Image (cartoon, rainbow, N blue to C red; front, side, top):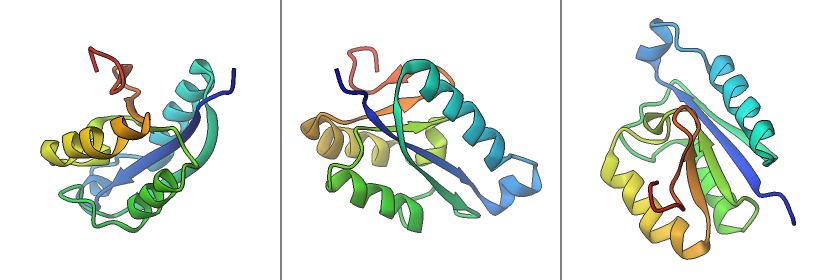
Length: 119
């Protein structure tokens, strides 16, 4: 069986940087999770200093393009607010883009997978 190709997405806003939220720490924790769960790492996408209020960020757009071009199967994030602070945006992404393509979001801090019934 082929390993699922994972995209790691990390983000920190300017405000969060001031509070010492670390991109490096997010990346390390999510990479460890990916290795433990057997994902093949495709790439790390990092929006440094961008708000999570919407998807108007360069690296999330690059990630969406790679999803569309079938380069990744799963988006791994430390916490869901790294992907977006707007829950309806996340649900729309899952329902309209990921589920129909058999792709998923995994929130590593709580081991939640959007492709499962509990996710």
